[in-house]
Amino acid sequence: MTTVSQQVTICNKLGLHARAATKLAQLSQKFSAKITLELSGKEADASSVMALMLLAGGKGKVVNITAQGNDAELALAEICQLISDKFDEAE
Image 1 (spheres, rainbow, N blue to C red):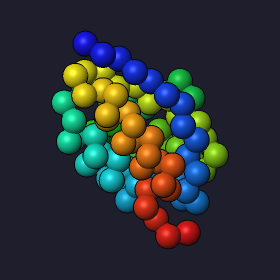
Image 2 (spheres, helix red, strand yellow; image 1 turned 90 degrees about the horizontal axis):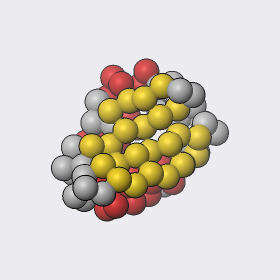
Image 3 (tube, rainbow, N blue to C red; image 1 turned 135 degrees about the vertical axis):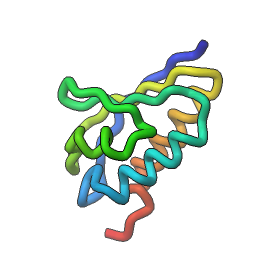
Image 4 (cartoon, rainbow, N blue to C red; image 1 turned 180 degrees about the horizontal axis):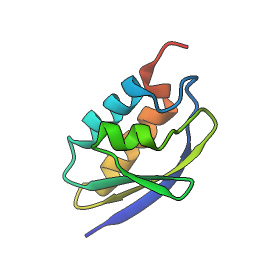
């Protein structure tokens, strides 16, 4: 089983708010890999909108994303891209 992880800085203005968390959770659910976000010592399952929002990931915060499973590398790449693209939000 493959395990990959990467640190990403949240760069959208509103951070990991409801809409962004929903997009991230929906993307995570497309993969068989288990995806976890870690921020300030707290961990959240990336497929859970509530868990993501409880991380309180504001703009400028660095999250560590870990993906574990057969499609872990693809999952990690797509999630990092979503965060880098500011969750496709117009700023």
